[in-house]
Image (tube, rainbow, N blue to C red; front, top):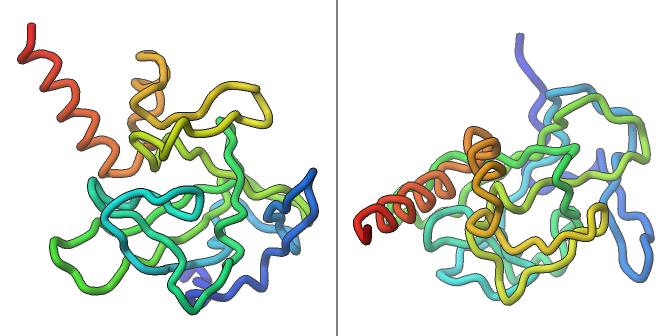
Amino acid sequence: MCMYMPPVGSYAAVRLQRHGAGQRLVAALPVAAGAAIFRFSGQIVGRNTGDRCLQVGQQSFLTPASQEGEPPWVFLQHSFRPSVRITHPPLAPRDPDPPVLTATAIEALPAGAPLTFDYTLHEYVMHGDGFVCEETGRQVRGFRFLERAEQEAALPRAMRHIRSQHSQFLFGQESRC
């Protein structure tokens, strides 16, 4: 069975909704569990420059391309119980093309459902002090700062670069003992 893959940069299945002082991304129509909601790309930068970056490799961060302005994906909000999973193929060394990321529904979502993802599965150490999770009131600073039990539970769902950085961190810790 062939699953529908929206074209890169098509945001027909989502819309921005006012939320507090800002905006959030919501489903524009009902979405089936496992369905690709939208796909996006941008440009790769070598360091995290702030809230418009998403870590996609150990030293690689995706940010909107200069001609994009503020694409809807930058309005994905954090949740420790996300509605969306963001995936992408591994980055090849010196690959001139940025990866295409896919936002997929974790469960069936009704129209108007907030689209959220877990930043700690993508960001090893957040820029600055991170931020406070709106749902839980917890500080979100990246995978590195989760409790050990949370790291172990989340590791199978974490992006490949997070698993690699985490194993490098653990190996570094063991060698200091």
